[in-house]
Image (cartoon, rainbow, N blue to C red; front, side, top):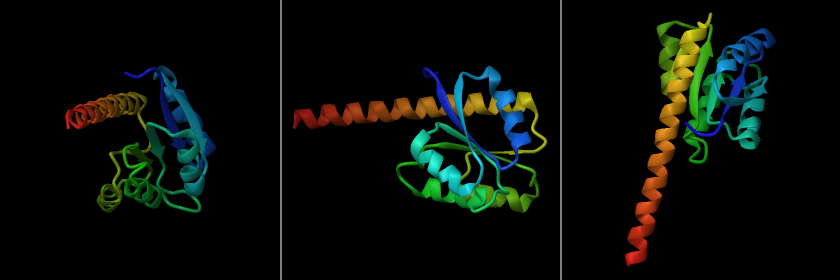
Length: 146
């Protein structure tokens, strides 16, 4: 994996944030906290995370809306989003998928399940980044022959 990943924890509940931070202690990452939907969008711009652990029920903008906005923007659509929420009805899962989430985890969160999903999502992000570098390299090589 990369040197150190950046994970943004977006949750308005301090106890949830502390729990997620504790669960991520074994993952090689730097974390930042966002306390509502708008704060999440602001922190994405400044922190540039590789992965967002995104709560759905937040003030100002819901996690669904935050996810939809990030996935619609070409500069942020590659950020992996793991929705972590107390909502677990099929309709909520469908809304999360429609918003563009990469994965969905229901509360209460199991530490092993969270860390495995985070590690797998970061591994996938690393592969996507490498594919993009190779694509750009091939494009550069093709352009230099013209």
